[in-house]
Image 1: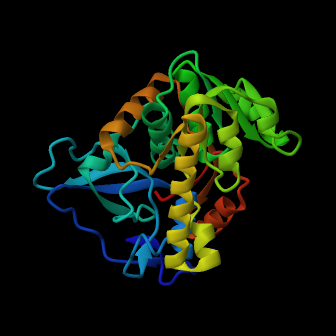
Image 2: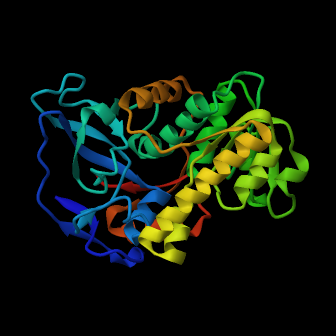
Length: 332
């Protein structure tokens, strides 16, 4: 099969599309013929080596943590899926490899594809959607009538999070550039803040929940807009930046220490519960999200579709930070 993989850590140009052996389905696996995948910021961080102190691979490694496709084989202990099912998944980082013609995934990380959307849009859903769901439904427990602040509303997580928060009945504020303001409103945002012109901490206060996806000094700024007793979901760790400055091991230690200090300070100062959200590989959660998508309440946003052979360009676009929604890789 064809697969996009890297033999060493580095810039996007280390990615190559090569012929590799087909994967085999383990007893709990479904073997998926990939129709589409998508690229996430974490894919770029893994490829660059910024996560290698936490995520260890024996190179070469096939990239990719999002997939939409069809089941072509199932393991002997699989009970939830059958050959021919259209499915989606964001597999565990221990078993990536969705930017390929075939991928084997544990059935516990798989859900049925929403029939309402095609494979290209479905591939944009799993990782970003699971992150948004875990942040808004589980970590911050957003309820109808609450006020929610979502950072980076035009990004992969932000575009889904805005729609999901509105589905939950919340009033939503978000940040984006002026060129994306109308787009953010079209997703349901009630208050759109152009971060070039306004500081969100100057125009927001007493919000119930924050989905913080920028990190660094933005953490403290977002804390300032929360009401006492509010909740914050952190979806960035600061690890890649710390690794770049201090090396893979000291950098991880510094980033985790800074994170712990912020969590303690938020609770001490304002009684704010901060939860670090790591995208769950939970097929049941993904199925609940897929059902919301099927209802029409949430639709994944695709910025561009590129062929597998342009995987390096896809990574470069994601790293630019200027995408609207997701960059999708069409495999078949």
